[in-house]
Image 1 (cartoon, rainbow, N blue to C red):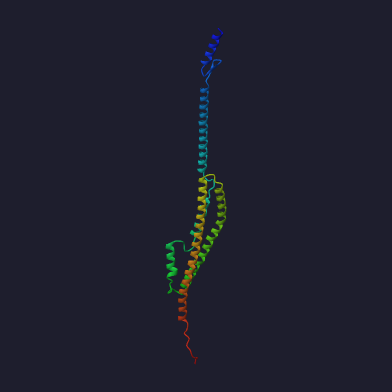
Image 2: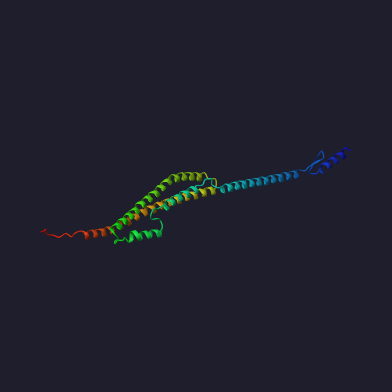
Length: 237
């Protein structure tokens, strides 16, 4: 009888499955390991998705910075300064910066000096030409003064733009700062061009006045010699 019970117990142990029951709960080690592996893989996928979302958020933030406009602009002050320089040029006295006006003035007062005119007319013509030279130099000085006045504004604008460029948070801000620096250089070139033009105008009128004066002086000398009593050698009776 005891031998039969022992055999039955051994047979029960041999036939026990890989899983075990604990209080009605079946525990399967292989299934548990598979579940743990699946959970780990799922967690890894979730972490990858989180990192992807973080990278996308960072990319969007950088794109937003690159598209952010520069808070500083000096375009309007530059345009105002250019208009002021242009206004000084437009205020040119007597002979303006106009091709037809210049051609007419030179034909009348410089190229074709009326040498057959009266002495009074010659004096008046010379006076008019001298006045043209004087006011041209005055205009040149005004333009030069305006250019010098713009230097301080250029210095302030340059400092602000360089500071803005160095602290730019994105590509657009850096590009806009660079474009405004180019605009500042363009305005400085405009001032330089205006100064050269005004100075050249004054010098050209002065040179033309001297050339016309030489031609008129020769005619006046000829007239003076013509009306002066001719000197006859020999003593008087």
